[in-house]
Image 1 (cartoon, helix red, strand yellow):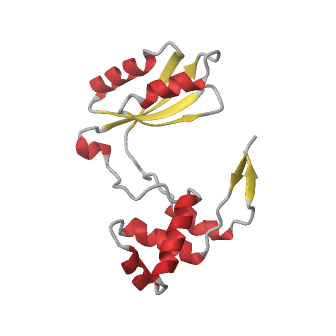
Image 2 (cartoon, one colour):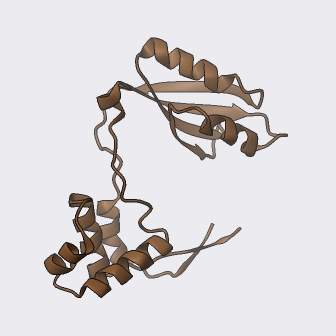
Length: 169
């Protein structure tokens, strides 16, 4: 078990995160003007939020469907335990259609979110995924519609109430 440092957010941190989420191209000077704090304060807060891993990036968020990948699927993988997760992770990382992968509890070992151009293309992606000798079985579910897109802003807004500084995981 490793200790995970929990970042405390105050109302200014949350306002800064909200502003950057709404307008990712905004500059530090404009942030300071809108938040009515010094430019150095905004820069220091940003640096701290990046350093603590609260903000992971400011790059564009791309909609896979808008670039031709209209099929989303969630795939549970059962892996051969002896070689472990690392070889499978390296294999999955090399497949562009694998958007994310998580080790999980339950009947499977790894849960992936993948995209494809069509159902036929989904078969191609799945075949590529299961071609690794470390993967024993895959089970997929096709997403029909996205009801709540990935989001963290509501969570960040409630994080100012968090009190523990360390969580054991």
